[in-house]
Image 1 (cartoon, rainbow, N blue to C red):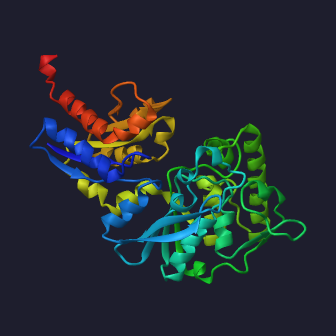
Image 2: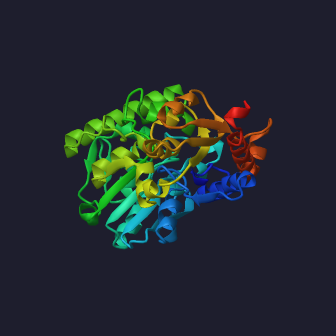
Length: 380
Protein backbone atom coordinates (compact mmCIF):
# COMPACT_ATOMS: atom_id res chain seq x y z
CA UNK A 1 0.00 0.00 0.00
CA UNK A 2 1.21 3.49 -0.89
CA UNK A 3 -0.25 6.37 1.11
CA UNK A 4 0.25 10.06 0.35
CA UNK A 5 -0.10 12.08 3.56
CA UNK A 6 -0.92 15.72 2.79
CA UNK A 7 -2.36 17.69 5.72
CA UNK A 8 -2.00 21.38 6.33
CA UNK A 9 -1.20 22.83 9.74
CA UNK A 10 -3.72 22.57 12.56
CA UNK A 11 -3.68 26.23 13.51
CA UNK A 12 -2.42 26.91 17.01
CA UNK A 13 -1.35 23.32 17.63
CA UNK A 14 0.82 21.50 15.07
CA UNK A 15 2.52 22.46 11.84
CA UNK A 16 1.88 20.70 8.54
CA UNK A 17 5.06 18.57 8.81
CA UNK A 18 4.21 17.65 12.41
CA UNK A 19 0.68 16.66 11.40
CA UNK A 20 2.02 14.55 8.54
CA UNK A 21 4.42 12.68 10.82
CA UNK A 22 1.66 11.99 13.34
CA UNK A 23 -0.63 10.61 10.64
CA UNK A 24 2.23 8.49 9.31
CA UNK A 25 2.66 6.98 12.77
CA UNK A 26 -0.99 5.92 12.83
CA UNK A 27 -0.82 4.41 9.34
CA UNK A 28 2.26 2.37 10.15
CA UNK A 29 0.72 0.95 13.32
CA UNK A 30 -1.71 -0.95 11.12
CA UNK A 31 0.26 -1.33 7.88
CA UNK A 32 3.94 -1.39 8.93
CA UNK A 33 5.03 -2.23 5.39
CA UNK A 34 3.14 0.66 3.82
CA UNK A 35 5.03 3.17 1.71
CA UNK A 36 4.23 6.68 2.95
CA UNK A 37 4.96 9.94 1.19
CA UNK A 38 4.70 12.99 3.45
CA UNK A 39 3.62 16.10 1.50
CA UNK A 40 2.48 18.85 3.91
CA UNK A 41 0.40 21.46 2.08
CA UNK A 42 -1.02 24.93 2.68
CA UNK A 43 -3.63 27.10 1.00
CA UNK A 44 -2.31 30.61 1.51
CA UNK A 45 -2.75 30.66 5.27
CA UNK A 46 -0.62 29.34 8.09
CA UNK A 47 2.12 27.05 6.81
CA UNK A 48 2.38 28.52 3.31
CA UNK A 49 5.79 30.03 4.01
CA UNK A 50 7.25 26.77 5.27
CA UNK A 51 5.60 24.66 2.57
CA UNK A 52 7.03 26.76 -0.27
CA UNK A 53 10.43 27.54 1.20
CA UNK A 54 11.24 24.14 2.70
CA UNK A 55 10.05 22.23 -0.36
CA UNK A 56 12.44 24.21 -2.56
CA UNK A 57 15.38 24.32 -0.12
CA UNK A 58 15.06 28.06 0.23
CA UNK A 59 15.92 30.44 3.08
CA UNK A 60 13.92 32.09 5.83
CA UNK A 61 14.55 35.45 7.43
CA UNK A 62 13.15 37.41 10.35
CA UNK A 63 12.38 41.13 10.36
CA UNK A 64 10.95 43.45 13.00
CA UNK A 65 7.84 45.18 11.70
CA UNK A 66 4.68 46.82 13.00
CA UNK A 67 1.97 44.44 14.12
CA UNK A 68 -1.77 44.82 13.53
CA UNK A 69 -2.04 47.45 16.29
CA UNK A 70 1.36 48.94 15.44
CA UNK A 71 3.10 46.97 18.18
CA UNK A 72 6.58 45.67 17.28
CA UNK A 73 6.61 42.03 16.13
CA UNK A 74 9.21 39.69 14.66
CA UNK A 75 7.89 38.34 11.38
CA UNK A 76 9.33 35.46 9.39
CA UNK A 77 9.49 35.59 5.60
CA UNK A 78 11.52 33.67 3.07
CA UNK A 79 12.90 33.12 -0.38
CA UNK A 80 12.29 29.99 -2.42
CA UNK A 81 15.10 27.85 -3.74
CA UNK A 82 15.06 29.62 -7.10
CA UNK A 83 16.63 32.61 -5.34
CA UNK A 84 14.10 34.89 -7.05
CA UNK A 85 10.75 34.37 -5.36
CA UNK A 86 10.05 35.88 -1.95
CA UNK A 87 7.29 34.38 0.21
CA UNK A 88 5.41 36.41 2.79
CA UNK A 89 2.65 35.25 5.14
CA UNK A 90 0.64 38.34 5.95
CA UNK A 91 -0.41 36.73 9.23
CA UNK A 92 3.20 36.90 10.42
CA UNK A 93 2.91 40.71 10.49
CA UNK A 94 -0.82 41.46 10.50
CA UNK A 95 -2.41 38.29 11.83
CA UNK A 96 -5.17 37.57 14.29
CA UNK A 97 -2.88 35.28 16.29
CA UNK A 98 -0.74 38.29 17.19
CA UNK A 99 -3.55 39.78 19.27
CA UNK A 100 -5.19 38.77 22.51
CA UNK A 101 -8.90 38.14 22.08
CA UNK A 102 -9.78 41.36 23.90
CA UNK A 103 -7.60 43.37 21.50
CA UNK A 104 -9.28 42.24 18.27
CA UNK A 105 -10.57 45.39 16.63
CA UNK A 106 -10.83 45.61 12.82
CA UNK A 107 -11.78 49.27 13.10
CA UNK A 108 -8.14 50.04 13.93
CA UNK A 109 -5.97 47.10 12.88
CA UNK A 110 -3.61 47.67 9.97
CA UNK A 111 -1.70 45.80 7.28
CA UNK A 112 1.24 48.23 7.57
CA UNK A 113 3.60 45.47 8.75
CA UNK A 114 2.75 43.34 5.72
CA UNK A 115 3.72 46.27 3.53
CA UNK A 116 6.99 46.55 5.42
CA UNK A 117 7.77 42.91 4.60
CA UNK A 118 6.97 43.47 0.92
CA UNK A 119 9.26 46.51 0.97
CA UNK A 120 12.08 44.43 2.48
CA UNK A 121 11.72 41.93 -0.33
CA UNK A 122 11.65 44.67 -2.98
CA UNK A 123 14.67 46.42 -1.49
CA UNK A 124 16.61 43.14 -1.62
CA UNK A 125 15.89 42.84 -5.31
CA UNK A 126 13.22 40.12 -5.40
CA UNK A 127 10.91 40.65 -8.34
CA UNK A 128 8.41 37.84 -7.72
CA UNK A 129 6.59 37.91 -4.40
CA UNK A 130 3.96 35.47 -3.15
CA UNK A 131 1.81 36.87 -0.34
CA UNK A 132 -0.09 34.28 1.72
CA UNK A 133 -3.41 35.83 2.70
CA UNK A 134 -4.80 33.73 5.54
CA UNK A 135 -5.27 34.57 9.20
CA UNK A 136 -5.61 38.35 9.00
CA UNK A 137 -6.64 40.59 11.91
CA UNK A 138 -7.41 43.45 9.55
CA UNK A 139 -10.19 45.06 7.54
CA UNK A 140 -8.32 48.05 6.09
CA UNK A 141 -8.46 47.13 2.39
CA UNK A 142 -4.67 46.92 2.29
CA UNK A 143 -4.30 50.67 2.92
CA UNK A 144 -1.70 50.07 5.64
CA UNK A 145 0.26 47.84 3.27
CA UNK A 146 0.12 50.48 0.53
CA UNK A 147 1.15 53.21 2.99
CA UNK A 148 4.29 51.25 3.89
CA UNK A 149 5.06 51.07 0.16
CA UNK A 150 4.73 54.82 -0.35
CA UNK A 151 1.07 55.52 -1.14
CA UNK A 152 -0.75 58.20 0.85
CA UNK A 153 -4.38 58.55 1.87
CA UNK A 154 -6.06 61.80 2.94
CA UNK A 155 -9.41 63.04 4.16
CA UNK A 156 -11.29 66.01 2.69
CA UNK A 157 -9.21 68.45 4.76
CA UNK A 158 -5.93 67.02 3.51
CA UNK A 159 -5.13 65.18 6.73
CA UNK A 160 -3.50 61.75 6.67
CA UNK A 161 -5.88 58.97 7.57
CA UNK A 162 -5.13 57.05 10.76
CA UNK A 163 -4.70 53.25 10.56
CA UNK A 164 -7.66 50.91 10.35
CA UNK A 165 -10.80 50.18 8.42
CA UNK A 166 -13.04 52.77 10.05
CA UNK A 167 -10.90 55.67 8.80
CA UNK A 168 -11.71 54.73 5.19
CA UNK A 169 -15.15 56.25 5.68
CA UNK A 170 -13.38 59.65 5.53
CA UNK A 171 -11.14 58.86 2.57
CA UNK A 172 -11.13 61.64 -0.03
CA UNK A 173 -7.78 61.50 -1.83
CA UNK A 174 -5.39 58.73 -2.88
CA UNK A 175 -1.83 59.70 -3.82
CA UNK A 176 0.28 56.98 -5.47
CA UNK A 177 3.14 59.17 -6.68
CA UNK A 178 5.44 57.85 -3.98
CA UNK A 179 4.82 54.13 -4.50
CA UNK A 180 7.93 51.99 -4.48
CA UNK A 181 9.30 52.17 -8.05
CA UNK A 182 10.21 48.47 -8.12
CA UNK A 183 6.53 47.51 -7.97
CA UNK A 184 6.24 48.25 -11.68
CA UNK A 185 8.80 45.51 -12.38
CA UNK A 186 7.58 42.97 -9.83
CA UNK A 187 5.07 40.14 -10.07
CA UNK A 188 2.88 40.09 -6.96
CA UNK A 189 0.81 36.96 -6.36
CA UNK A 190 -1.81 36.90 -3.61
CA UNK A 191 -2.20 33.28 -2.50
CA UNK A 192 -5.71 32.90 -1.13
CA UNK A 193 -8.19 30.22 -0.10
CA UNK A 194 -11.22 32.48 -0.61
CA UNK A 195 -12.85 34.26 -3.54
CA UNK A 196 -14.96 36.82 -1.66
CA UNK A 197 -15.54 40.23 -3.24
CA UNK A 198 -14.54 43.33 -1.31
CA UNK A 199 -18.01 44.53 -0.30
CA UNK A 200 -21.57 43.35 0.23
CA UNK A 201 -23.10 40.33 2.00
CA UNK A 202 -20.27 38.05 0.81
CA UNK A 203 -17.58 40.69 1.29
CA UNK A 204 -14.65 41.04 3.66
CA UNK A 205 -16.52 42.82 6.45
CA UNK A 206 -19.70 40.75 6.50
CA UNK A 207 -18.09 37.33 6.25
CA UNK A 208 -14.86 37.72 8.20
CA UNK A 209 -15.36 40.85 10.31
CA UNK A 210 -17.10 39.06 13.21
CA UNK A 211 -14.19 36.67 13.84
CA UNK A 212 -11.92 39.72 14.01
CA UNK A 213 -13.98 41.40 16.71
CA UNK A 214 -16.64 43.30 14.74
CA UNK A 215 -20.23 43.44 15.94
CA UNK A 216 -23.17 43.90 13.59
CA UNK A 217 -23.01 47.72 13.65
CA UNK A 218 -19.25 47.71 13.06
CA UNK A 219 -19.64 45.26 10.17
CA UNK A 220 -22.05 47.64 8.46
CA UNK A 221 -19.79 50.66 8.96
CA UNK A 222 -16.71 48.78 7.75
CA UNK A 223 -18.53 47.59 4.65
CA UNK A 224 -19.62 51.14 3.81
CA UNK A 225 -16.06 52.34 4.34
CA UNK A 226 -14.68 49.70 1.96
CA UNK A 227 -17.30 50.64 -0.62
CA UNK A 228 -16.17 54.27 -0.42
CA UNK A 229 -12.58 53.07 -0.77
CA UNK A 230 -13.44 50.97 -3.84
CA UNK A 231 -15.31 53.87 -5.43
CA UNK A 232 -12.32 56.17 -4.96
CA UNK A 233 -9.89 53.59 -6.35
CA UNK A 234 -12.08 53.35 -9.44
CA UNK A 235 -12.28 57.13 -9.86
CA UNK A 236 -8.63 57.88 -9.03
CA UNK A 237 -6.79 54.89 -10.46
CA UNK A 238 -9.24 53.53 -13.01
CA UNK A 239 -9.18 50.11 -11.35
CA UNK A 240 -12.43 48.37 -10.35
CA UNK A 241 -11.76 46.12 -7.36
CA UNK A 242 -15.17 45.99 -5.67
CA UNK A 243 -16.48 42.77 -7.23
CA UNK A 244 -13.30 41.02 -8.30
CA UNK A 245 -12.99 37.51 -6.84
CA UNK A 246 -10.52 37.50 -3.98
CA UNK A 247 -10.59 41.27 -3.44
CA UNK A 248 -12.11 40.65 0.00
CA UNK A 249 -9.37 38.24 1.08
CA UNK A 250 -7.52 39.22 4.27
CA UNK A 251 -9.87 42.06 5.06
CA UNK A 252 -9.52 43.55 1.60
CA UNK A 253 -5.76 43.16 1.32
CA UNK A 254 -6.53 41.37 -1.95
CA UNK A 255 -8.04 44.61 -3.28
CA UNK A 256 -5.07 46.62 -2.06
CA UNK A 257 -2.58 44.34 -3.77
CA UNK A 258 -4.59 44.55 -7.01
CA UNK A 259 -4.90 48.33 -6.91
CA UNK A 260 -1.44 49.41 -5.72
CA UNK A 261 0.87 46.51 -6.59
CA UNK A 262 -0.65 45.10 -9.78
CA UNK A 263 -1.25 41.92 -7.82
CA UNK A 264 -3.19 38.88 -8.98
CA UNK A 265 -5.17 36.65 -6.63
CA UNK A 266 -4.54 32.95 -7.20
CA UNK A 267 -5.56 29.76 -5.41
CA UNK A 268 -3.13 29.20 -2.58
CA UNK A 269 -3.48 25.42 -2.59
CA UNK A 270 -2.88 25.29 -6.34
CA UNK A 271 0.29 27.38 -6.01
CA UNK A 272 1.59 25.10 -3.26
CA UNK A 273 0.66 21.89 -5.09
CA UNK A 274 2.43 23.03 -8.24
CA UNK A 275 5.61 23.85 -6.32
CA UNK A 276 5.45 20.48 -4.55
CA UNK A 277 4.84 18.68 -7.88
CA UNK A 278 1.89 17.15 -6.08
CA UNK A 279 0.30 15.51 -9.11
CA UNK A 280 3.45 13.51 -9.78
CA UNK A 281 3.61 12.39 -6.15
CA UNK A 282 0.05 11.07 -6.39
CA UNK A 283 0.95 8.60 -9.12
CA UNK A 284 0.73 5.03 -7.87
CA UNK A 285 -0.92 6.02 -4.58
CA UNK A 286 -3.65 3.81 -3.12
CA UNK A 287 -4.88 6.36 -0.60
CA UNK A 288 -4.50 10.04 0.31
CA UNK A 289 -4.92 11.34 3.85
CA UNK A 290 -5.35 15.08 4.27
CA UNK A 291 -6.59 17.25 7.12
CA UNK A 292 -6.99 20.61 8.80
CA UNK A 293 -8.22 22.04 12.06
CA UNK A 294 -11.87 22.31 11.02
CA UNK A 295 -13.97 20.99 8.17
CA UNK A 296 -17.19 22.86 7.45
CA UNK A 297 -19.22 24.22 4.56
CA UNK A 298 -16.49 26.75 3.72
CA UNK A 299 -13.92 24.00 3.15
CA UNK A 300 -15.24 23.44 -0.37
CA UNK A 301 -14.14 26.94 -1.39
CA UNK A 302 -10.63 25.93 -2.37
CA UNK A 303 -9.26 25.17 1.07
CA UNK A 304 -6.43 22.68 1.33
CA UNK A 305 -8.34 19.38 1.87
CA UNK A 306 -10.62 19.95 -1.12
CA UNK A 307 -7.70 21.22 -3.22
CA UNK A 308 -5.88 17.96 -2.48
CA UNK A 309 -8.99 15.86 -3.20
CA UNK A 310 -9.59 17.67 -6.48
CA UNK A 311 -6.19 16.50 -7.71
CA UNK A 312 -6.66 12.93 -6.47
CA UNK A 313 -10.12 12.48 -8.00
CA UNK A 314 -9.08 12.12 -11.67
CA UNK A 315 -6.74 9.32 -10.64
CA UNK A 316 -9.47 7.50 -8.74
CA UNK A 317 -7.60 7.74 -5.44
CA UNK A 318 -9.80 7.80 -2.32
CA UNK A 319 -9.19 10.65 0.12
CA UNK A 320 -9.69 10.61 3.89
CA UNK A 321 -9.82 13.96 5.71
CA UNK A 322 -8.96 14.18 9.41
CA UNK A 323 -10.14 17.27 11.25
CA UNK A 324 -10.01 18.75 14.72
CA UNK A 325 -13.73 19.44 14.40
CA UNK A 326 -16.56 18.91 11.93
CA UNK A 327 -18.57 22.09 11.60
CA UNK A 328 -21.93 22.92 10.09
CA UNK A 329 -22.23 21.76 6.49
CA UNK A 330 -19.03 19.73 6.46
CA UNK A 331 -20.85 17.03 4.49
CA UNK A 332 -20.48 19.19 1.39
CA UNK A 333 -16.88 17.96 1.11
CA UNK A 334 -18.21 14.58 -0.02
CA UNK A 335 -19.26 16.21 -3.28
CA UNK A 336 -15.74 17.51 -3.83
CA UNK A 337 -13.63 14.36 -3.85
CA UNK A 338 -13.32 13.52 -0.17
CA UNK A 339 -14.40 9.95 0.51
CA UNK A 340 -14.59 10.11 4.30
CA UNK A 341 -14.19 12.76 7.00
CA UNK A 342 -13.27 11.94 10.59
CA UNK A 343 -13.04 14.08 13.70
CA UNK A 344 -9.84 13.29 15.56
CA UNK A 345 -11.18 14.20 19.03
CA UNK A 346 -11.77 10.97 20.93
CA UNK A 347 -13.52 12.25 24.08
CA UNK A 348 -14.92 15.48 25.57
CA UNK A 349 -11.93 17.80 25.99
CA UNK A 350 -11.21 21.44 26.67
CA UNK A 351 -9.67 23.44 23.87
CA UNK A 352 -6.41 23.69 25.82
CA UNK A 353 -6.15 19.91 26.21
CA UNK A 354 -7.21 19.29 22.61
CA UNK A 355 -4.47 21.55 21.30
CA UNK A 356 -1.88 19.83 23.49
CA UNK A 357 -2.99 16.38 22.29
CA UNK A 358 -3.34 17.12 18.56
CA UNK A 359 -0.41 14.98 17.41
CA UNK A 360 -1.51 12.08 19.63
CA UNK A 361 -5.11 12.30 18.39
CA UNK A 362 -4.04 12.54 14.75
CA UNK A 363 -2.02 9.35 15.07
CA UNK A 364 -4.92 7.59 16.80
CA UNK A 365 -7.46 8.79 14.21
CA UNK A 366 -5.22 7.66 11.36
CA UNK A 367 -4.91 4.27 13.03
CA UNK A 368 -8.70 3.96 13.33
CA UNK A 369 -9.11 4.86 9.67
CA UNK A 370 -6.57 2.25 8.64
CA UNK A 371 -8.23 -0.43 10.76
CA UNK A 372 -11.49 0.19 8.93
CA UNK A 373 -9.62 -0.59 5.71
CA UNK A 374 -8.70 -4.03 7.06
CA UNK A 375 -12.36 -5.09 7.17
CA UNK A 376 -13.06 -7.48 4.33
CA UNK A 377 -16.43 -6.99 2.58
CA UNK A 378 -16.85 -10.77 2.71
CA UNK A 379 -16.78 -10.64 6.47
CA UNK A 380 -19.56 -8.08 6.85
